[in-house]
Image (cartoon, one colour):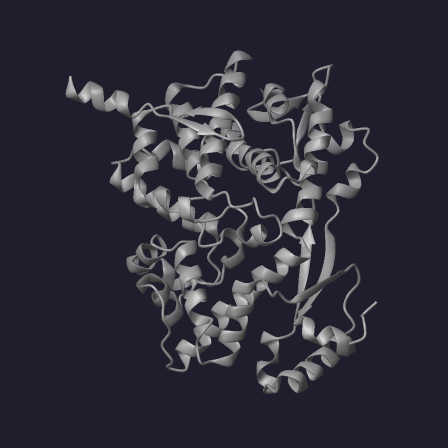
Length: 422
């Protein structure tokens, strides 16, 4: 009787601001959510420093993962209703795969990726953490890991987890537009899911849903340039990167800094993709990191005696961010060199330190990538067409082209003494 009560107690309902009530479908998934690896996502912001532009954007990876799991449940229900065979074990595995797809994200999500651990992506870290969880749960994640790594024979299950029309993207567009208040990012996720089908083991969208897909792609493009790649967001994220770069440099010079034990582990040691998997302590320390480790360090370093670290941290905490300009053509090297010369004079710094004051950045993005995993449309006659071919939207081809922009960032004090690049 006690065991039955414990099982019932795991049937939780969560009130989500985007979708309403979300149910946790099984005791096993409840236990996964309760694990420290997953609970850590409560303290990692979904969109990093975006709250400095859109104050409401304080939602977390935890919320996003639960939302994506909810959408996976709706997708499985839709596909089953159309005759696609999905066993209960496959359904649970697909739910687990999408639930854990972001479990490897580090502090401030994408902002610090490849920074604390060089060359190690969050996808690899997610795979490593899922492997660890599989040992804890004695092989219960075998099928989920197959789906996550695209090794399951039912290819469409992986496409729901990771693809150009996956449930990850559907949730983050819906959730990020909700919390930022950017209406251009709103998509018809419910209609897109209702239009899903499977043909030849691949995910397709029925022709009736083509306009919802077009809106999805346009919304994704607008959200990237208006939210994720907003110039002020880029400025804050790059300042955070420079802070950690300086902290690592100081540690390399034998200067210790205030830091949590796990953050200090990554600041003190040079950890690369090659040696990350050789020492289990690296993953242990990584699994203990979240935004609070970084934020508490930055708040403390704002009063450090090192002038560069102090300057970057105090400016970030006060939101006195670097001025950032985005340009469609490559930056004139003479303009950047002139900026650096003026920075050396204005701030009285050594030329070797000027990269902490002036930097450039290449930004690339495309709303739709023409690859082997294209979005496929099931036409009325039963044929399959790529969305770019099936759509009558004149600028869909434009959405597939990679847009490149060139950014330059520098302290606002240099604005008055520097001619505009344009």
